[in-house]
Length: 359
Image (cartoon, rainbow, N blue to C red; front, side, top):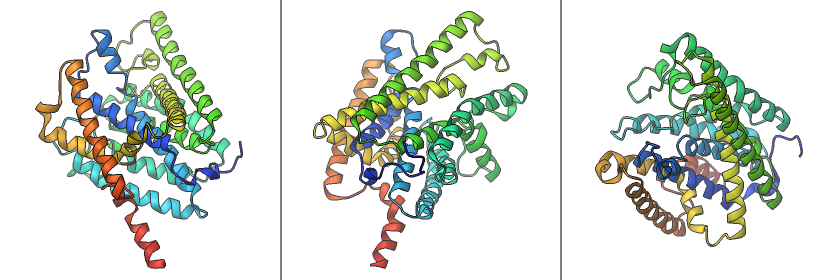
């Protein structure tokens, strides 16, 4: 492929498969938030497959979106300005949402750092972007492990919210929070690299699916074999932690395997939606309102926790299906009348107004 920083020019328009993949990411997070976390039987194991993967997919798709955004602009400075605005919107919204009583580690304010990283690297040639993504996929988790092993008090899963000191918020976004830039940046960077491919190509869809499956299964296999040979880690400073691929462990094999899963899901959904666009149109519409859906489900969990959360797989799936159907219905109706979702409009409104004044 070309080594230019811009992706394939045919991707100026939206690609339905990417929107559908984004919708699946949010639905996957909904599953994690309302259902059981136990893995005592096959049903619970299958139900929890999105745990630690749906959120990575969400960030991976954000990386693809960054490359799409930069492809639609002759001047990368405009794309950078839009990303900076989005970061400034996501930061307070996420911090405010974290104050609600839903028990969820909100990811939105972490997007502020993800987008700032995107601004910094969006002009890199593709080979350098891939090299950077590969390096941080290994080095980020290794640094995280070293810090946790030597200074365990510095690294945790504390969330940040409105009222915290600015330095604490910064620390949470970079290092100590549930989605630290140190270990989550690879998902964004690999997404940006994938976003530069010709994602309208059916062959590319298959390649992405193939590569993602190989990476995900390879990481899981290395983890299983390594732990079988070396044994279970004994404490956070044990080097065998580097073999763990448990969800949100921040360890290398989890990071790499989850990105592989994100790539395979993206490739599969791109192929399916490209083949049957009308059938999957409602899911595409939901993906175009993913931010609004994400925020709405947190608010719903704040007010309707007892109604939505369930301890059994069957009841949890019923809850997920009901919420998703309602959300899809709303998204389809909304998109018939409006170009963007309620909160999605906030992300572009200054630029739409600026264009309007310039005409």
